[in-house]
Length: 107
Image 1 (cartoon, one colour):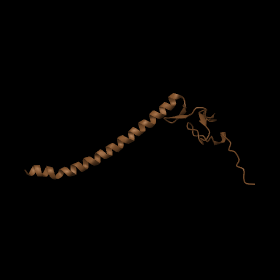
Image 2 (cartoon, helix red, strand yellow):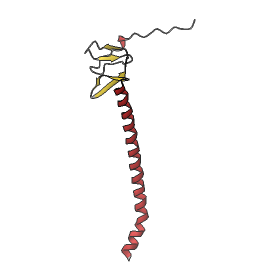
Image 3 (cartoon, one colour):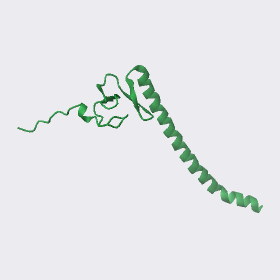
Image 4 (cartoon, one colour):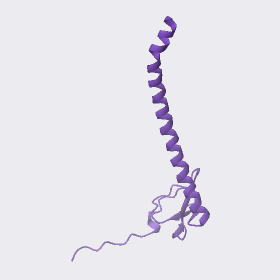
């Protein structure tokens, strides 16, 4: 009889612990579903031709919008796009490939 009472006394704590575990597990599962949806939409855009591969920055592939202006890094010849300050392949500064427009002052 005492064993049954001990089990029943600890039961609410067990339910509370299981509830916390279930809540955390649900949050992780929800996050993973969102990541899968994001990548599925991105792959769809690549398949439809909106994005195209440019190269890679280390092990990570780099995709750009189709028709984005490009240049080659003077150091290694890797394709780079406007706005990048450094080459993702060799690390050379490439900001000078695209001259900045001088801002006109007032008057």
